[in-house]
Length: 290
Length: 290
DNA sequence: AGAGGACTGAAAGAATAGTTTCATTATTCT
DNA sequence: AGAATAATGAAACTATTCTTTCAGTCCTCT
Image (spheres, rainbow over the protein chains, first blue to last red):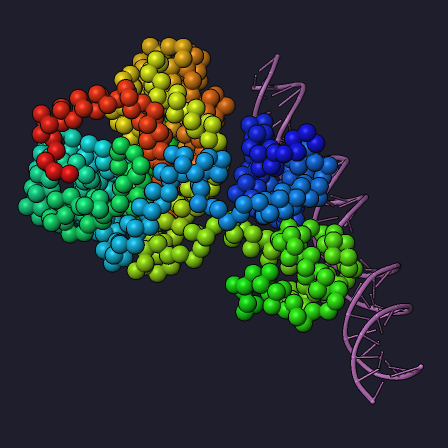
């Protein structure tokens, strides 16, 4: 075999393009738990990948093996070689890249940020915030700033699918005071404000609170001045080896909130989701297939 | 099984004394190339250890397994767990919350997504993509879809600070063909397309490519059909315990790209950044301190 | 030294795994 | 739109792998 020094994973990656749908599914299943999944019986692997056993048999032949057993034998050889080599060192994330590569440094920093941020979250606060966001008896306003408006919009897009009465306010636009005209006692504001705290957003928060709104704040480890106005405050670490801050941890938090709120409101939103799906079908916005 | 959290190696070690001659031989053979040798057929292992197959069959039963296949299954599980790494291990992220709480389940899923996605990135691709994004001799167009346009915009906002000639195209708007009028040979397109791949975005990519643009694609593990048009393709795992997919891993990737491009272009962008700062000062957009 | 008991492996039998065929379904090309 | 082609999985078939039996061997103890 001429490509003897390539790992099977490499060979699969290289051919990924030329594979068919079922084969690609299979390839992903193999790489997902590499190499463990390839070392089990053919039927198990097929089931994991949700393809038939012949598909597996055919693909390993495509990869240049005489049959599945030979494929496994190669996999075991690889494993043998790997274990005797420098093991344990899993502190690099992108395995091909050197330790000092941006990919590894950045990812490491984000993981640390997640660690620290999550460790400090009060579960009761989290649950309370989700309950409040799920409460359809009051309206929900979502506010972001210059950079954070992308996060705000992400939350908005999802909350809009989950519940009615969701309003996205762009604090970056001069028109934001218009939106505050109709704020009622008990309305909820989800506000994003991180470093380079914006005067506009603070003003907006002050007015909203004065009008009786309850504020859920997403901010950074140093906390936006808005935190003194907020009912509930989530702070994420955002420092990474970059000229800018990272929104990854905050996004993680936002996505978790979305998932939790969705769980809370499932009974009410099932129909809502179905209606949305129907509309998508009618607009042919998406390709029919995964 | 009560010794469920002991590795098989541990269990063999513990019993080493009580084993018979042939079994000890076998034990050493297993531990010699652990776990690879135990994952092959029983006959191979027997031959390696220079014992008979019944000896192997008997010993695995002594170790508490119903048969050799069950022993192998356990070995594979162990391998799986090992590969997913020490950080992943039984760690709860939000310490106050129970293990089954959404905060922990979600975070765990995202960390796994990051791990798997990063492991598959080709560093050369990454570096090449960054170089291309930093190349100011051609224009940069950034395109997102229904949900991903938040990611696209995030990239846009930062690239706009780093370099000139950055254009944000909303594929969700009907006006996108207007933007393609001026595309020139060699322009770069950064396109986001994840599950529920959008027909609009695909069309846009096809036209862009036909006009000579080079495409950098950010997609999910199943890859948007655009990947066949793309020069470079980054795929992230996006599955989380939620009704929706996670953008966190993709955002991490985008932020890393931003950091790397910033590093590449620092000489050119220093002035640009200063100008931006001055403008911020003049607009009094931000509160003065940190 | 010799009997009892445990250990071991050859070989047959049972079970499981892997391969191939073929009809069905999806996709591509005209 | 329809024909041609490719992809896919059910099922039958084949091969391999695992288990068990049983007879021979090695050790231990009297």
